Image 1 (tube, helix red, strand yellow):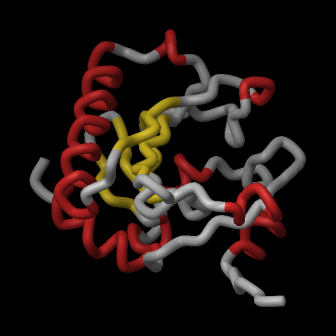
Image 2 (cartoon, rainbow, N blue to C red):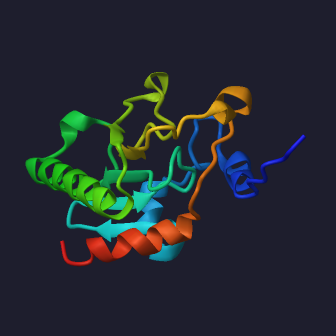
Length: 164
């Protein structure tokens, strides 16, 4: 039997609380205060942030969220909504340029019952997809194979978010 080692997953397994969160601290609120490299922060705008998902479904899985801590999409101001959509569009352009995916999954889950891992802070997922990126690993043992180290992805994408 071959083994696929993914030691970074232990950080996730040991840190996720019953509610799917990080044990009390909101990762999106903490990300804007912490070291950008540690938070995997690509961009902090006036109203929204862009960061790489520490526990991605695929290479360059990006999370975009309002800076203001809110769980209600209807509470977003026009400015927050506009900046968030602009950042989603920019993120797609950057990932297309750098990684040439065949498609994207873009969306959000509102509430724990809808699948939100972090239900108390709105966030959108931008997940690039390639033909053939779904293999037997997730089906057999909930394992995903990541072809690029997350720090390499951060280094490739961050320059595209400097002057936006």
